[in-house]
Image 1 (cartoon, rainbow, N blue to C red):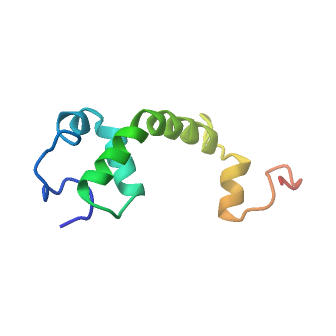
Image 2: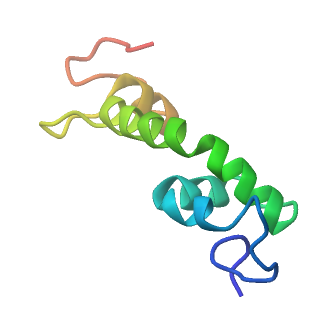
Length: 91
């Protein structure tokens, strides 16, 4: 059984019933980020994060890979690539 996502070990209470199902994407993202705590606590955190997290992830994706397929300096830095195509140091 995968931890966090989709396990039904708690009956839906007042704080993790319909609201948690509505915010599908954010819930999944937050559940993957925060493994730990009870199901109820995870879902509460997920609800709080969901709208922010969704927009933030879209922002992140845009900043990491540009439309024409180039990588941002931030992503190159994470991969440990120190030089840009032009040969000057990025950071």
